[in-house]
Length: 224
Image (cartoon, rainbow, N blue to C red):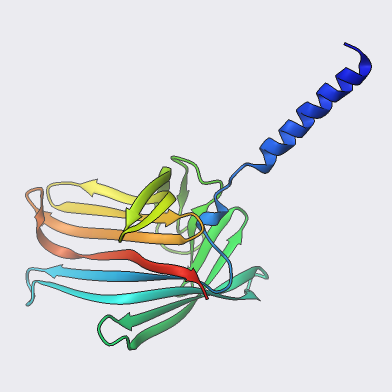
């Protein structure tokens, strides 16, 4: 092989390597940061206590999250405001409004909730990767991990081509049942949350004695 052909072959290899590097997907689109991006959820909260009346009580409301303007936080990081607005399901009246903080920093997707810094995602998004949600706050260690990475699913008749689960807890015993996870979709963000922390009887998940449940399901999303 003559010299020009060798040089051409080397260039083709380098170009191919660059293209492969450019197509690496770290999963940042699971954690949108664009101003005006919003998601609306149908939220159900259930409270159980057999010693009270009613023994099982629930509330349902609509929750809207929206990404706001950029600012510099107390650590000098460029972050975005993250609005949480809670509405009455029937009247549409605003029940509660809070401003949290949202940021991608050091390969972490973080949300500061009520002054508690939580690592909601880490990048790259890969099956089985584990981290501590509470690594930067005083709460107890809470290890979570990715599962069903880049799988499709439908929620409330909305199809999402690529979604990923963050598994928080999955424990079942004679008297305890905990099942907690979140689901994120590319270019959307959080589309589902299901947290159950229950005291049960005789392995029966339907015989709940005490505990609580929180369930989020996306109903709309977009850009305003």
